[in-house]
Image (cartoon, rainbow over the protein chains, first blue to last red):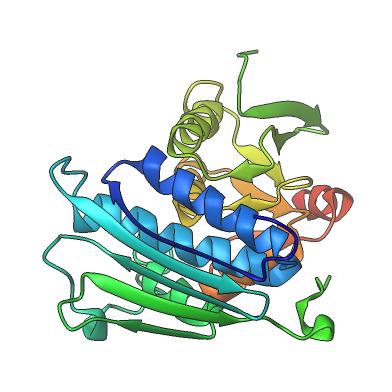
Length: 148
Length: 119
């Protein structure tokens, strides 16, 4: 990416392997940094996209090497729009158990949907439940700093 | 003392203070190894007073969080105590969103945490 470019995008089908997932996330993180994103926003995006990509590979495609994960990332200086779709059967995103309930809060799974919803500006799932779309609007400078 | 690749361990007044080698705890191989090493502290080395110091950790995925939850169960089963300290604000926020701040004892500084072991 050159310094005069103000946007970056990728539309790619990756194999159902975690290394491939992390490689494409690294490309995204590099693009965000180049476009001037920083601090809390970058952390939020990384957390959300990790959840989406790892879930697509592990729970969606069940690491089946005959299946791929389709990622579409479009980023500019103000918006990061990310879509991840797997070839699995999908899940009922409307009826995911609340992972913060007392009897579930110490269970080591089931936080992905909540984290994506809370950390991104907007998020939505397709009807089949095998694709997630999410949007992050860059915070104003006073919003993005770290707090103690 | 066993040697580890993902953590360092120092004794401070009867508490095992664990620090992380990796700034970003995200790679699945790293997370698996980290989980094994943390569990080994309790299972093999019989340490049950653990302080995890997150100073220098910039990012951790929820897969890494899951390892901490498993460790917490192991420490409880061993009648021990586990505390966390020095989390950067964004990681602390993840604990709050997921309500894991109710499960873990989070302290601002290592000194705060070590003092809390004496309570």
